Image (cartoon, rainbow, N blue to C red; front, side, top):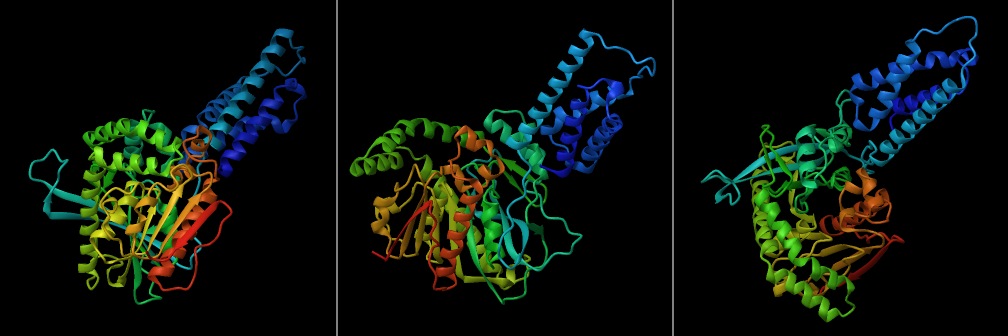
Length: 492
């Protein structure tokens, strides 16, 4: 909650309390509060801090201000009628309820800042687009168009000038809000306030010069997710000296925001395919969750992965996007094309992803041995691993409580050390920023019971330790947490 908002709520509450006293007996200070309240509203609005959660307080402030402008008789002191007293007290009570309602909206949909990363570097951010000249776009309505993707990069940077403001969590908030609202079937204004959320990253500031090169990590988000929905982890890794690249898988992500201003929203055809897939597999997942028979659980997963081609089809498109990005980074590491190009240590490359992005990360490592470390954040492992294809890169799988162990029967294919982590009280969505930014998801049960800030801390520290071990060669281990069950294995 912003300072202006706290002050506004306090002023309005005092105004409502004042109405329980006859006008001529109210402390003089209370008589000036309506004017202070409307001044705070104006400052709050014109300083760009307006958000819909404060609308009830705006309305109440305006009413209180108009009442204060209404001329009062100075003498003789009138005796209020019973009806007028009851009416005044009732209106004051309704005003208090209005304040409580507005405060509740602010708490349910708070304006938060991303937690500050604890590394020694500041964090720079940039964005670029790539076109695959060898691949036609499957989902485009323009015949002959080639596949295009957008990449957002977080990197260790020099300390920014104090005049430079941190990047917004959502640029083009109006567009993203509208698409997000369509996706969830809610009014667009619900999400627009996220344009006020500030990150700890700064656009296109110079890369840190402390090291000659920095290790590289690629990231693939979950189906339909924006490429910045794991910004907390991106900033954390970048602050510790990693260059982290996240891909917007065009037509599948909510919207791909190109640096030239172009935007490509998700394809309704792709979304409808996802819905059909979910409908087909819902009963199977319910059986998987209820079953205690490991053989039956394995059979269910195999059925989900083989009966419907949706996951595999999208996985293959995503993996080609990953290959395209990797090739671009390898080509440009000796050039000056991007703010970070000449600082890329491509000999130390890792990859991770969430949900379908986690499966994408593993599949990319199955197809290309460039990745020295791989992490799957709660993703069902579609692709070739179920067929027994060997993974030679160290692997970490982080599970939500409900889907813990879903990929374990495939792990004999891993010929490198691997780590399994299951986090108590977590759900699938807890592996993104969303529960942190939307506390209401916890109340509604769509995210787990674990505190979102705590969850993000566990994810960030686990990722950092894993990549430090396998990309930097540090002799360390995954930190222990009371909420986490951690199992580490040597290669098969």
